[in-house]
Amino acid sequence: MYGLLTPTLRRSAAALTHSKNHGMTPGPLALLPPIYLYRRLLRAHRKYLPREMRLLGDEYVKAEFRAHRSVDNPAHLIGFLTEWQLYAQKIEGNSWVGEKLDKGKVEKMSDEQIGQLYELMQAIQKRGTEGDLEDGDGGESGQKSQ
Figure 1 (cartoon, rainbow, N blue to C red):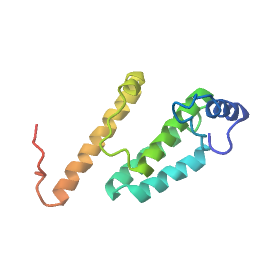
Figure 2 (figure 1 turned 135 degrees about the vertical axis):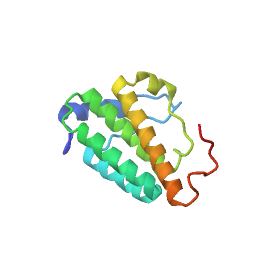
Figure 3 (figure 1 turned 30 degrees about the vertical axis):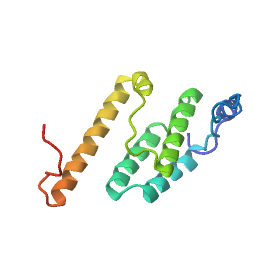
Figure 4 (figure 1 turned 90 degrees about the vertical axis):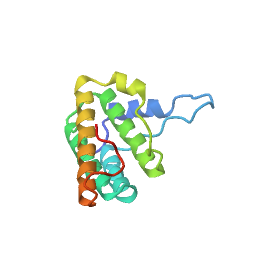
């Protein structure tokens, strides 16, 4: 996956970026090569996220790109790169704050992806709890315990 895009992947990406949109919505964006997108994501985290969120985000980005390093299916690669590129744009535009997951995307997720999402949620909650304790308020930051 790293390095230059294969000719097949380049053609597939070109087909996506040159589709007609009839002026109703913006057209799809040109896909960045994996290594450039990876670097862009880490830079966006460094520039736009608080330290704790950046550390968690960096770990996740690195793990996902590492896990997809050997994927050969062009459709999977295009989907992977597209979603990460949209994520980078949201981080850079600060439009991610308070955003909820798209129900359609959640319904399309595999059991493994749902499990990863749950693990990510737990890691975020754990770091939030640790942060509350470090701030000295004993974890009572205005949130009710369940």
